[in-house]
Length: 325
Length: 77
Image 1 (spheres, rainbow over the protein chains, first blue to last red):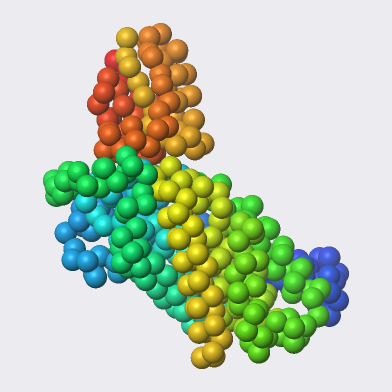
Image 2: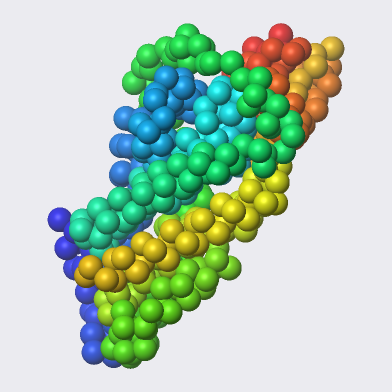
């Protein structure tokens, strides 16, 4: 089914523009046309369909659900909900405080917030269509693992003592969330359609430029970096390539939409899977602008701890995957 | 006079919500006092988790999205 995008790119680049597949420009342009057309069609169809299904899932319901769970399951569910619940990063502070004042342990809240940027429907969709199901599965499991272990670690070191005083007070004075507070009326189809349409416009207006930037970079890598160069110079033999990829990813602030087309190229060029994933996760999740937001509820010490924790887990995941593959 | 607060950390949607409310109030000639509230502590105090949220005369009327015109008009009556 996805081959129609190859046909479209064949027609446009080779027939209409008269380029040949064996020139660098032809190759790069073909990659660009095929990927952008494919990504936009898939995004439009899938964001709408997924939004229809999850229209009635919101942070209020997630909080009521998490408040009832035991601890271990809490980290797992916190992380899973982080992956599937729609919410914009500008809401992360109110969500953090809402969970905290609802008596949910900091670790579980952080499982939710750490997984949220790493895994979402757009990321999974792009991974599936560009790179294949195996790496998609590895990516999703790695993302959940980061959220779950990160959350457990923060509770283990009693991270709540490093919250800002007012947030700590809210946590200590928390009262359990009542079920009926989160009761939601069932939605009609028209309401679901409205929500899905809004989501679609929202997400598209946020990610369209990343698609062009990401695919553009991917196409440049694809066409102009000599095949085998990355493999020779940054192969799995060099232990330092994974931490370097993680460090390189920090200042490169992108969301998953922008970085996945780059991953596609990196993997095709022979960069080991662990190094590629570590780079991708660091680019998506370890971003200063979003960390600075959390300063409103956390002290520098806790922020630095979480940041170091993320970098360490991305590096470990990268080494592990390089080692087993 | 209605006392309206838009709760949110200052993202684009919150600004748009405030602008929309102001425009509609001006159109209808309703006198309102509009405040954009960005303090996380105050937002928490209203029990709101999804922003932008709208508080009219101290009651949370809406949360999680830019409210539609019909909804805003109903608050201004």
